[in-house]
Length: 358
Image (cartoon, rainbow, N blue to C red):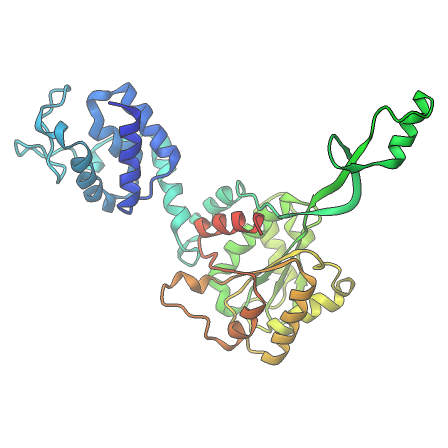
């Protein structure tokens, strides 16, 4: 069995709606190389993590490897039909009767957790999410600074060229070059902790705690009816300690939302906008504002002029029928560069990748 055929089988599963990543396909190919006579079960063990995907797997398996179903397996088992039963009527072992390796079970649980909405996670799942999110890295876009560094190619560095020429009697034998130094932009996180965001607030604080580990210059704030800077609190080594301290530092949990006042406080109180100037500002909120809408529109326009990019993550977008018709969201949206959901880990990973390419 060629590896190209096995890879194509994984792609067919993906097109059929089964979540199959590149890592799983590679594991499947390795498993078939070790036990080629157990092609069906090698795929079941490595490519399938949800019971509901088994009928889809059987259908795609029959379409891709149909010829193999007409002859007995080399293990002595009769061929299987599309329902997963054997052609002679025997029924294979149930999933609960098969001993699954612990590492496969853990990987399957993590894969399911990545696709779950933050609003549906219990305390145990949030603790597991903490370990998963800690491996997530937010990469900010880079900018050219005013400082220069030496390089093999670039503009002529006259000062270094003249200095080197003194060693050769004034003859510039070697021309020095320089380029602008590049540095990652600052990221500023604004997390809504109002009552309407209570189902998502804890998970998003876990994300903020992991994000701040990427760069010491990044900032994190929470807001409901007022702005609270939590950068120092969320830099605590333990996520649990960080969340505990954050709950004490922010006094407006589960209250109303005044986004316009929050943005104005951010721009006025922190070096007159220097914190967000040239930065990527990420707002995590459902946009259900109870404040002055005209102020919100004015302050978002002001923020857009100062920031490099404005990203808004609204977890209500997990509903396919959602439309940003709330007056707060409608007023802010014209000043947003990237509008995404952020309701689960998969969407956060995609957003982190998109921010790096802004």
